[in-house]
View 1: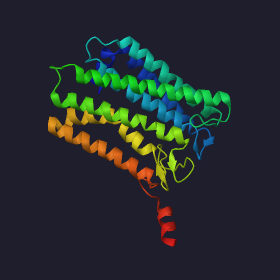
View 2: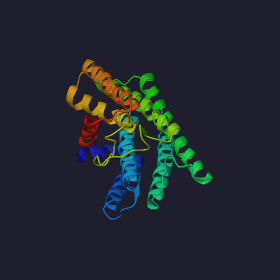
View 3: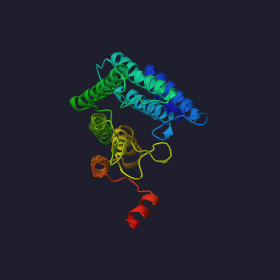
View 4: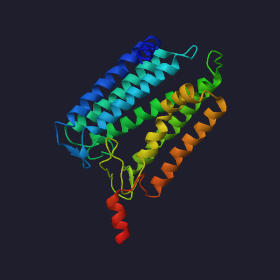
Length: 264
């Protein structure tokens, strides 16, 4: 692990420190959940900034690792685009959490509407930039990389981009639930609904293909055919959870909900 961390720092010092900052900030946010009872949609307000900060940490370190392989890539432009765009999101989400107000889906005032739109634009820009990186991994040859690892990176980026754009399905509805209004359940930190469909499940699974597929391919499977098969299975899993959510079905139904269904 120490070698891995040192390697990231060597590959991209800027994103290394930014990711580290996001990790520290995420830990601060999770600590704040223990010291405040402020809630948004029935969950502690600080869980959301925690999730976004931690997700940004994992994204930036992953991209710092992958972009190192790209020849003739303007890494400084990429670095500062990611820092500014995702930094804006984290700051605004945390600011709204401090006031116990919504960041996403908040159209209550013209200012909040503009800021929500800017978050959508920031997320779109980051996703498109990541898609461009994915194109470069198809464009160039990487003789120093194992073929299975290269395909894992490619598929990881493809699935990430597809399910990152799934966020528009939530944004356009101003609702991450299907069958209720932004339902949250006491499901550890993720808060996915146990009673209705939740679009966040497939969004989460798909976006973290960026880390999961290369790690599994490089350290477990070490085979091109198995990696491609794993990628299709992973994409299918994300798709099935999306279909399930659209149908209004939770990933795991709560015991209370099952009892209510039996009574009906």
